[in-house]
Length: 456
Image (tube, rainbow, N blue to C red; front, side, top):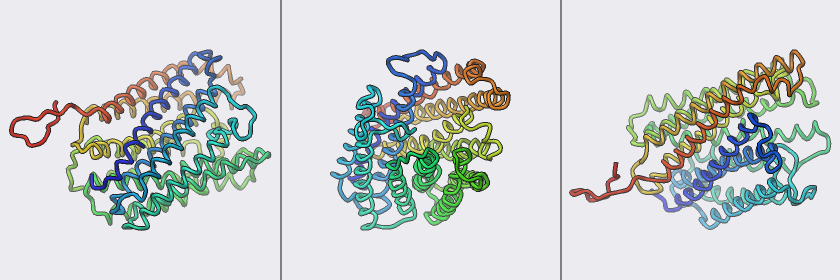
């Protein structure tokens, strides 16, 4: 480890992995409720379980992004982080806010209270005081890393990462705007939700993936940066107006059907470019890096993001198709594989790469780590296919033939059982990953060795 302040990343990664464990556990419980709908219906209703599942997903991904920034910016900027104390203060604010939100959700505290009670908007259910805390933490974070970058070396990776992180924070401000008009509310709500995951988060993903390719393959920085600029340009060009595919049926003007269809169809390009970038970098690479698990997660990230966000997104993004499919299990299939491929795999890739360096060791538990990749990737892929088939049946029976929603749910129950089985594989893979990353093998000192050797 070149810079001491890179150790800040370790505590961020640990918090992120704890929330990751909660998130997949909540997802498994939600999947079981689809199979047995009355499970915990009084103690922990489905809407609360779903809130915990989606909110913990978003929080742990963002905490992971922040940890990745604290890990890679010292290397890119060639200087220590400006203020470690601010970094720890920022994390404390985020943890307190997260715990406060969870307690508020579970016990439905302060219902109807503007400041302390939860909001009703999906993904933005956090109480107002938590949202304010998030903004304060984001300002501390942006100040800390921006000062570090401005005082040090400027690279394409750090610049694109900063652009993505600033965009993430600024777009969150629309979470405070909650107009009474439902169409207007949804229009600005998508500024947060869509322009995060299909806009600025793509910039963060591209920057972190570029850093990993640079370290793992040994390809010249100039080549990596050229690819990075192409990916960023296509992501912003397609992603911003691609927001229109959410405006089809919320009361906005009809021209959004054409704008949304055209530009969201182009959103497949940056994800294809990222997949091509990752494989070309490995093909051109001259370095036989010892951390094969991190390379597997990086390639898996680019590949599954292309299929989940790109192909499955394209499948139902045209307005003539979306008219029938929006809000069905096809949406759930796309969302699960897209989030897992693009952002979950990305965070797990940087965790896998960074932890041996943070612990000052050679890469360890790689076979176990790679087993966790195939378990999670296989489980999530099977889940995506299962939900896709369920969504096709649901679309035909409910949206075309006009059958009642609950009658249709009974007819796709077999798919929900299979989805739960896939979820078990994902949770098992997540637990194996956490063990593989956090629990190095014991070290022994063999005769003739001047340093500890990992015990097999």
